[in-house]
Image 1 (cartoon, rainbow, N blue to C red):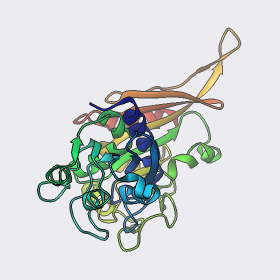
Image 2: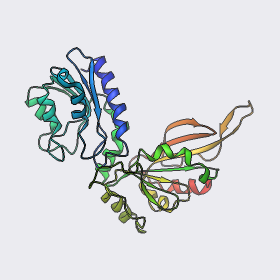
Image 3: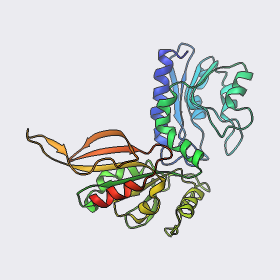
Image 4: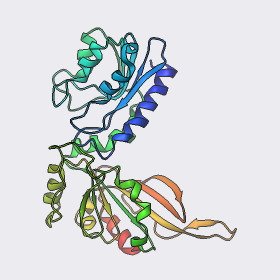
Length: 305
């Protein structure tokens, strides 16, 4: 069982792993915290881009000799293969940690898997620690692996001039690999943020067939794509592949003098996941359960444009 200190460390690892959103693809965004023998945090790190050190190595480097006999708390099972960087499970073995906690098992792990190799080296391993919380960051990457295409988010505003609403989506861009702007231009969410030779921005002409468009986005190395604007033609082309909606709806004065949201809400086929105020708007986040059609999303955007 994980101790309170270890659970706190895992939540910290999940939080810092989000620093890699929008730049690690095709690799996953991972975070790691190292605790010493007494359970005190002595190092942390996250993966930023393919070709750079992984989260475990960055955390072990920060911890130094204090990692020996301690615990590594990591959001994803340590890798078990030598790619552009050495396997992380070997770095943990060489650092002589005594215990490794992991939130999510890696479906891409080679051979027996990093967890098994760690156990064979005499290291205690705990699996599934705060797995659901870690999926807040790793979920879109895992979705891309499972479906063979990027996780697609469509964001738009209802009842306002979207050309004046760019400030509301600026923060979203940097957490996605690719952004398809309202005019059809495709951009890297964080310009120059991805590793060399592992990612590219595809040509804007993705074709008129959803399957071919999704294939082009996947081949570019994207695991997450953000589509902007209610009138975006790519949103209509890829309507059945939209996994998440982020909708900004305006507020109107209520009878008590406060404000209340007005306009269309979440369309059929999506489940409300989050609601928060955003200046003069309310932001709705809704996810589509697996197997549910997204065509109703197009209707909502048309109604609110």
